Length: 109
Length: 264
Image (cartoon, rainbow over all chains, first blue to last red; front, side, top):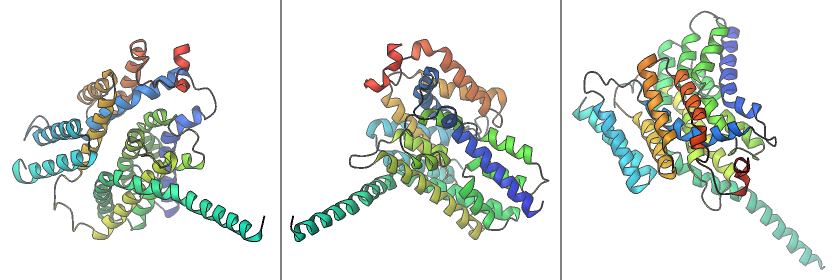
């Protein structure tokens, strides 16, 4: 592929990405009444999306062999429990991640 | 009014003006930085992986840096780097990248209200709306004495910087760092778990959260871990719409501005 063709490919990738981020704002511009259905989705979607994202992060974990996803499950549970207890983002994320790194490098690797 | 008095007024006006305007932006930046620390760890790590990957494909240093700056969408960038080595397939690239990033449509729908009234900042906030940036901007309330727009803008800017810096560093260090420590990328998972919990603890109704997890798991089992995103998104939207009579008042604030649906 020539340099120009590569530039075209990258530009198209930028356009495609930008579209996925901007379409809702283009379809439902500021200042105009938004359909109730859209407002409703805007309220209930985030909780569902965060659930989706947690699963999305774990999509490549092998639950059928090896250690059966134990390091991931344990670390996710500890992170969630710590957050429910202390509600401190840094404590929850740092503890969960350190636990995971220790588990996969030294214990269940 | 004497000249000195006028001088004083002008001066105080000037100092007020100059201390107020960067003041609010500066305060917002200071408040935004600690919130982005988990993303810093995650993005530097993933960005470095991306730089290393591009280097291993034989691409010059500016490819990962330009792509990280302009496309700025994790998994899509890996796919794009691959496409650059094959034949010229503009349509495939466009469709593929659109589909990979289709989940952003969700984020936009959730942010319509939060980005309202932010003027030019909105453009950059929309451009920089990655999974992590969206989650933080949605979930973290700007602290007292900061400005909502600047706060979100700096969160987006810091995250963007980590990602691009990571990609550049990754290309430079090549494969010196690969395989040293396993599992650093788990910070990203932990971040989403925490944001999920934040939302869970705030919500009175947990049906949307449970649906999000359950439907995504089911779609991974049915469609496999490479093709589940679109079916999962469609299923989530569909079920939320079907359950609208039950969930109608979920997440509604008591404020008057949000009561239009109740009136209906």
